Length: 99
Image (cartoon, rainbow, N blue to C red; front, side, top):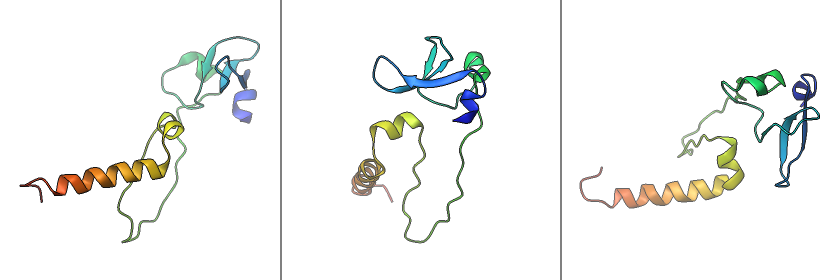
């Protein structure tokens, strides 16, 4: 995360034991993410609104596209989400009147 360090920020462990982004030698803002929109203090320390992107080729075997924020991926695995969505899709197909 050179971008953070090059802009007077630092990444260190917070009181909750997780890595967070702070203004160097300060106790704020304490962000869990390195991307945000509209947060002026965090933009001054190298946090950006530019997303990470990836190009993915789909095949006929692909059934789902799941996109989510860092908070989602911290709490659930891709397998958790795939299983939940597959189960929801299967139960919806069993409702009369749904095609």
